[in-house]
Image (cartoon, rainbow, N blue to C red; front, side, top):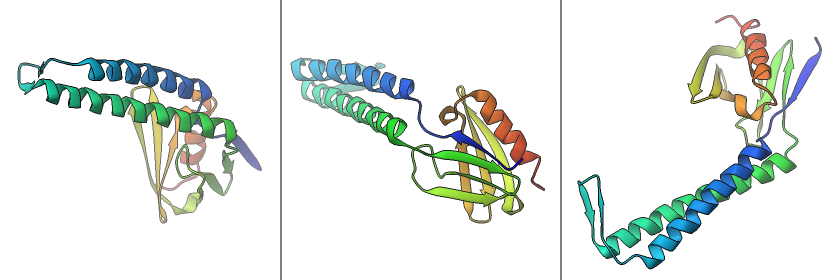
Length: 160
């Protein structure tokens, strides 16, 4: 094998869903915040006055707005990014994170440990090496099978 290359960038569908989902919620919580004239009780524990409830609603609106903007950033990166994950017999080369432009090259001989995490349906392969840590994310590879192949390729070449 000389080298295998995989596109390594955010998926457009997920970015669009993020923009729509959080944008709609931001709009509706903004409407609630601007028209609020009542207090709010959360789980019979936290009580807000009418003003406090409005501030709470505006904070939630802001949070949803920021998440919608993050979706726009993901969409932009998904459309414009030329990032790739490269596997060879000697090293792996990938962006530091799913949206980073910084490319990290790790020789297999420099890998000290590998761990795998699962968050909901997303898989993360944490590669600890003498220069730090590289995390590969299954959601920015084209298919789940690609992630499994990359993982098995790396594991077969290290001495941990």
